[in-house]
Image (cartoon, rainbow, N blue to C red; front, top):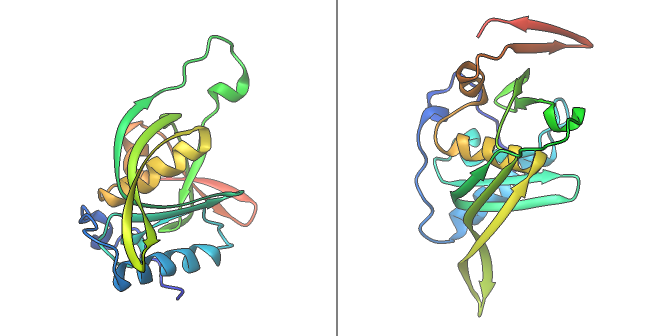
Length: 183
C-alpha cells in the first residue's frame, strides 16, 4: 500500500532504527509498502526508500534504479573505500547532486565513498517459513551512493547533514530554475 513519506522536519527521521529480529507479516507488509511507495514517486523520482521515511523505525530499505533492485534488512558496513584514480577523467571527479524524497526538489553536490561493502539480510521463503538469509555485497559508483544514503536514514542522518559536514551548498529546483538556499 502506498504510504505518506515523512518530510525532513519530522523527528521520527532523526531516530536510529531498530534491527529486524525476524520476518513476519508486519515486516513483509513494510517491505511491500516501501516498494509500492517508491514505485509511484515520479516528481521527483526516487531510487531508494527507507522504513523510517514511512514512519517505521526498522532497519529496512528498498532500492530500485535502472534494473538494480534490492530489499536490504539490517545492513552493516564492512568496508568503504574512496575510488582513487590516477587518470583525470571528468567523470571520476564529478560530484552527484543528491536528493531525498523526504526533502523533495532539494539537491546538493555530495561526495560519498564510491565503493561500499556491506553485509545484510534478505527475506526468503523456505519450507513454508520465512527466513532471513545473510548476504555480503560490494556496491560501486551511483549504487554505492544510493545504499550509503539509505543506511544514513536508518541511523537518523539526512543528506543535508552530510552537506553541512562537507560545507556544500543546497539547491532548490523550481520548474527549470535552480536556486541556492540556506542550510
